[in-house]
Length: 211
Ligand SMILES: C[S@@+](CC[C@H](N)C(=O)[O-])C[C@H]1O[C@@H](n2cnc3c(N)ncnc32)[C@H](O)[C@@H]1O
Image (cartoon, rainbow, N blue to C red; front, side):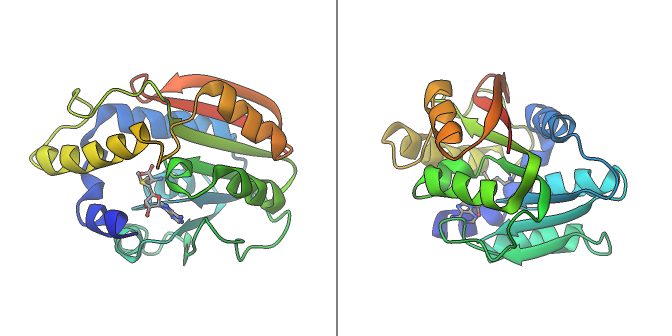
């Protein structure tokens, strides 16, 4: 949590990264949101995907995250947008109804949880049958930060935190999952029609799956 609280103070610099913006748009397309759908952004951070989701039509959007600092920036950004932001820990049972979402997105948040299997189980539980999941997660072959993913004046601070995240990925405290492992976890959670492709400059995997 402390890492994310520290990161939350300047995380939004990520918006200056063209690969990040491109990845979010890819996630948005893959979610296939229709008017009236209800979408969960799990580990929403500063609310950038939530913003994209509400800009596209009449979807109802819920963003959850455990970091108050991330959620504060998200709340400021999304004021008046109708997006519902809730403080929630992905490591626990989510305080959300069974089968209450048409889509769930987890963008660069699954790697940080204690155990991805039960978290995917929770995503399955809250999705309606036929609902879509989109996960973006760093691959074990992610390059160390500093490779030009970020731009702007806060690049050094961004890179220092990303180095910590990268180290935690290398020591397996964070779950940088291979496509095969991600497939196993998604299948074990009950998901079907799993597809994967590289995203975020080749550093992450974008997986889509259907409940
Ligand atoms: C790298 S940021 C990604 C934020 C956002 N999805 C994006 O793409 O910009 C990871 C986010 O996951 C959140 N997070 C990490 N572990 C979490 C947990 N156990 N429960 C809830 N949120 C968590 C962090 O607070 C942070 O906002």
